[in-house]
Amino acid sequence: MTNITKTMLDTTVKDLKAELKKEMEVALGRIKSLEEKSAIMEAKIASLEKDNTELKAIVEGTANLPGGTTERLWAEMVKLPAVKNSITSIVSVESDHSKQREKNLVIMEKVSNDPKLLLEGTGDELVKEEVLKVLTAIGEQGCNGKVKATRFKANGRVLLACDDMGTKLKILKAARLLKDRQYAGVFINNDRTVAEAAHEKGLRADAKDKNSNLTKGTGNLKYEQATINGKKVKWYWGVRGALLKKIFKPSDDEYQRA
Image (cartoon, rainbow, N blue to C red; front, side, top):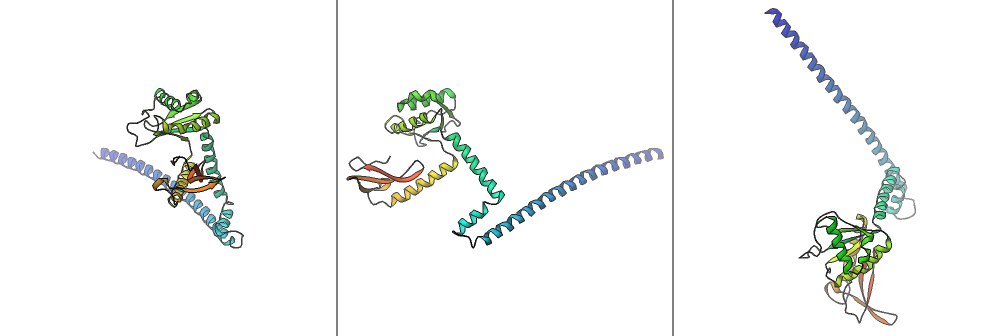
């Protein structure tokens, strides 16, 4: 009985030592990991403190430089490697997106259209059929073989990747005919980057604000009158080619926004 008890005790002690050893190893591993993370955080803090010191020096040092405060501060900030790399990265990505989109168009439909003019779905044949119908409506069905059409969402816009700028401009120019055809609620526009879309949205808001201050007409059809080369014209603010500009129309035409 004594021998059995001793054997059992020895086994228990051995197992306990093994468990304690494992737990110690795990604890040491965690301590080492925390030490490594602490070292990384300390390095980041040191880097941030250095950047903060440099920024303070920049702000203090711009007081005697020519130009406004913002311009002086920006001119000095872009000299910092971290800021410069960040800006370069953003410009590079934006440029790449612009290159991908410069020959692209999108076909979109008014959300309010009921029934829908464009069929919903992402199947290749269905999308090709819809694109052909739209191109036929504007008399440019011959361009069908020069574009690759894709729809990523069943009820989303159709992306047209044109083979060349000539095809894109031809379709874009003819797109105005959609107003007078079956697809009056469908629009063909340039494919734009996020930044370009945001920029145009801002321009349209500016145009709306400026048009609200015009003195002729009412509502969304307010305008002004002017005489150019002896001819009376009506004009309003609009967005063309990513620019906010005056849009002129002959006064003897029925006045309607483009």
